[in-house]
Every structure is written in C-alpha cells, then in structure tokens.
Length: 152
Image (cartoon, rainbow, N blue to C red; front, side):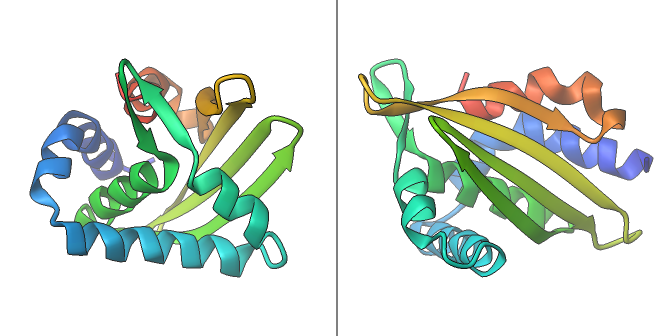
C-alpha cells in the first residue's frame, strides 16, 4: 500500500463537504455521466437496474441525495487526487445493490478496490448503506468512508 494513497484517501474523506462546494453543476453532471457510462459499459444488459438504483435516494435527516450525485462527487474527488476509475461491477440481489469499484493510482499504477452495498427499503422507497469494504489494507478507514457514503 502506498503512503500517498492513504494521504489521498484521508484528504478525500475530510474534504468531501468542501469538494461539493467547489464543483460546478456542469462539472458534477460530467462526472455523473462518466460514472453512469462506465457502469453501463462494464455491466452490459443491466441498464434498467443500474438506472433505477442510481436514481434512488439516500435519506439524510429531512433531506436526501441521489446515489448518482454521491458517486459523481466521489469520482470528482478521486480524479482530483489522480485516481482513475478503472472498472465498476454492479450486482443486484433482492434488495441489495452492490458496487465493486476499482480505482487506479495515476502516480504509481496501483489498483485499489472499494465494495459498497446499498439496501433498498421498499416501504420508504430509499436506499441505505449496508456494507462497505476496502482492500484489506484499508480496514482502518472503513468508518470514515462509511460516514461519507451515509452522508453523516
């Protein structure tokens, strides 16, 4: 594991709210479109499931954020730290929607993986983060990343 990636990840986690303020609507739309296109390209024939999930809402108090907006901000912040989205695998099993995201460090070429499970609550019509895992070396950061994706 590179020390640079830990620094990048830490900056990402602490600057997430700032990143949202720094990105324009046009930029956010570009990152959302890039993430969606990558997901569709990596998961052919799954367009309906992917669109339904990405358009879903995560409730944060009295407000909410769409999953695609969350992933757009994640992609924006990752790219600003020289991390490139390599691949996104999408799995849907019952109410679980699983994203396995592979990022490549543009500096040293190392690949990192992130596993996210969002669970759909049909009664509320919203999604909630179920599980989150990094490659084994990032277990100590799972709590911070969970907070980002939960919006807390």
